[in-house]
Structure formats: C-alpha cells, structure tokens
Image (cartoon, rainbow, N blue to C red; front, side):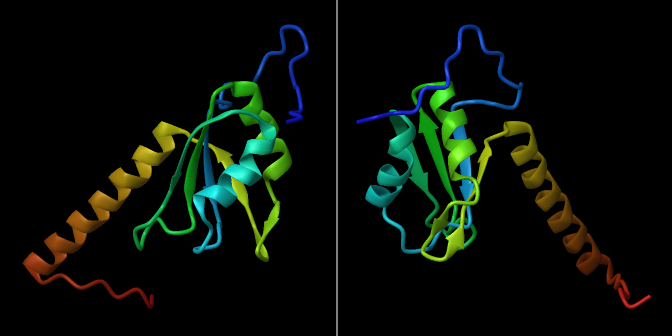
Length: 125
C-alpha cells in the first residue's frame, strides 16, 4: 500500500492538527468498509466511528495512528465527492464540541423556564 509521506525533517504543525478527524456530510448509507477504503489510503487507521442516531447520521470520527497521516487526509479529502456529497473533513477540537453541547443545554433550559413562567417571545420584530 502506497502512502503519501508528509514528513520533512522537523516540520512544525499548526496547533489545531491532531490524529482525530471529524467528518461531516457523509451519505447516510455509507459503510465502515467504505470509510476504511477512503481514509485508509492516507495511513494506518486506529478507529472509525460512524454516527447512527438521528442527530449524528452523516458524521464520523476517524482516528489515525500518526498525526502526519491525519494531516494528509484532511488536505486531500476536504471537498472529496462521495455519492454526490462533498465531504467536510475537520480536525476534532474538544473545546468547540463541548461549547456546542453547553449551548444546547442552555437553550433547552431557557425553553423550560419560558414554559414554566408562560413567557412567549415574538421573533417577528
């Protein structure tokens, strides 16, 4: 298997680069074997997790053994066409993901409080 090597001496990588990739806009019917075929071209894969819930369908996490392989995959697969869908391949960033979860919890809490106290907000203004 031919892999593309990015290593050039002591190449410094940007701080957001890591071995875990977050992939969006996947076809809902893609199999894990197809994911290994697509992403395995760029290096050894430790794990692939496909989203199966209603909220996570069309997304996946791909974990590479080597950070340079992950960078090569992002560089080559961002915008790659799979079943007439263009992939969005990003580096997984824990801080951003937890902020989204926190924001959703806060929005749910606001809705509950609005229902509890009978407050309605007119969004037409």
